[in-house]
Length: 405
Image 1: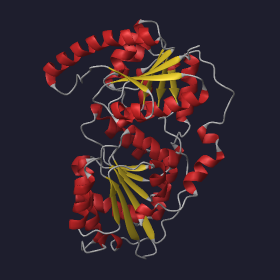
Image 2 (image 1 turned 135 degrees about the vertical axis):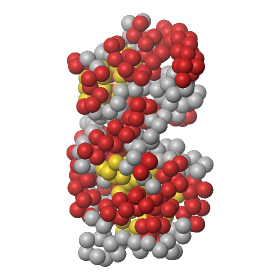
Image 3 (image 1 turned 90 degrees about the horizontal axis):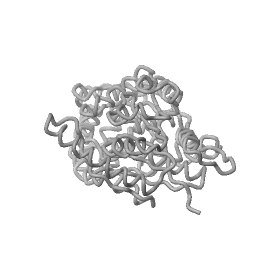
């Protein structure tokens, strides 16, 4: 007998794809179910989904926003064709429910499912609801949200505020004082961020004061006026790490490790005293699940400025500093970084505020609700990831990552 199928539609960026992966993993941990993704060849899903052993059905879809009337018209035509293609996929797979995670392919695939009578749910990770999920809101039997600000776009009875689904390993970790070494994690998302790659070497040189060798370790004092060594772990993005490494060398900054991608993000965040990052929903969910202070530099061209809105909401909660890109020059970033590295009390308060907003069990909750919507029975009850006592302990009890040394 074939197992029932769940269809997950959408993708594009890691912010769409990795929460979808977390839900898929949680659903298969809870029930005997097949998961199939619908996406495009252009998005992160084209690499990530097959690597993890799931099937990816592909549609040809392009964005409708940001290119004027010509792009809008072309995007609309392709979306109509994709909806017809998606209808064929739905008829063939006969999924019990479809989850839209946003992105180019989400609209056509989920709309086709709704028109064919398949129960529909949407996952909205941002405080500002994306175009695809806004269009799908009337069809959604469930709307899984991370922010209060997104709720008015959906019917009240459909809303479930569970947070952003995260992969296993994320959970609250106590924030210890930095001691003689402060670790700064720089993350630009899975693809890196050109602005952070370009500016952060200059930031640490300014923080050093004189820009000399070992400068980053000589420019910060804590509340007791003792010098604090600053060590940096910088995720630069694929094929960008060499240039960033050279920029730090030119700035004469030691105690820095530049990598293209960090596989164990949970461990890197848990090890950090302060994080400098973009403000995608996934990044914010990771920071709050663990509980770490951050300086957020939102990507200014994100759709509907959702990164800026995400960062501002977290800043109002006292969990982060939001610095818009136009004012986040090397001088301003260095001043803010120096202020926070010199004030352990402020960092600890920000970490606590972040942790209070964390939802490490979101993937489990979304998966359970999605299975219920699909009328798929769960296996015998298991402890959720957040309830497994060892999960957080594995993050907090490790030896410091050697990359920081």
